[in-house]
Length: 395
Image (cartoon, rainbow, N blue to C red; front, side):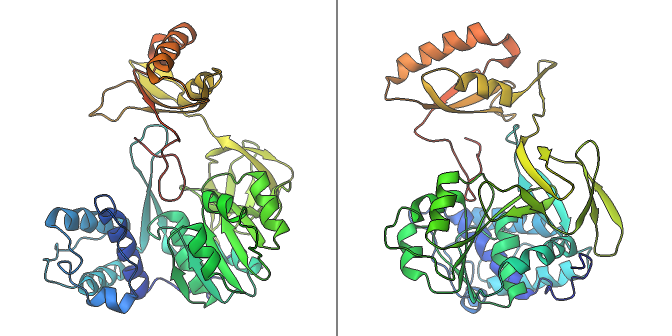
């Protein structure tokens, strides 16, 4: 397998730009609409005006700015009477004259969106090692947003590379179970598979599944395999893209072929499509089994500054989780408009009065952490906040 040969992987076209524009539009309108915007076929979407989508000018401005930032281009803002297709076509032409980059936005412990920019050719290259795992797929059921890196790679680029139609579906287990056909490829996040594996009569003969963005529970993985699904879990990062894959929950991950060298510090060399080597610092702590196989051990614990002191949010969250009343805890640095300290989101371990829980935790935090480490805002909820691809999100 030659990791530099990407000639069989189709580049982005106008349909891809329309698909991504619809994904962003659905996401932004979903913030205020009681029901999600219905999926449209791309020709219908292209011919629909912004006014026809019931877009307010402020909504359109957010979509417009996100889209431009994603493709690093500059266009005039369209008016409400113009069509989505006209805007997407103008952006596609401008992007074709640029360096052809795609930028995705991720937020780590700070909660502040961080841009991660990739050359489009580098994203397509990752599929050289992914495609062989899906030889008999005839249709893709995409349940994730295509303007996020995971959905872009597997929900947009991969179906195009496999030359199969893609069908966007809401991530509801009942919808997927009734829609499923032989030789389908499902692209989803772990929570959907957690529910699918509990459907008694669901079988996966000649059906493939892709999962990523967050660790998949071993029990879910095994149940899906027992139902005869061809299951492939991927691991990567917003900075490096897709790194590796595995097909069984107890197996180590196998590096994709474009990663060709591992350094003593755990960093990687990537062979680019032009044959050059790019040094890639690892964003996660990794246990190397050998030069081609690994086990991820979690995101590296980067410090944030609190009053001039280095503080590690993951250490704080693990300490709070050690309390018997806490099931899960997520800790982030406040956004500038919120303050300059840490904040915590707490999922209780049992049904307990919220006032009692807060008092108990404040006493525990004061005793266990120094002043800079103590979260000054505690939010209590039934589950950790997550975004559309299942990653922990800000609150």
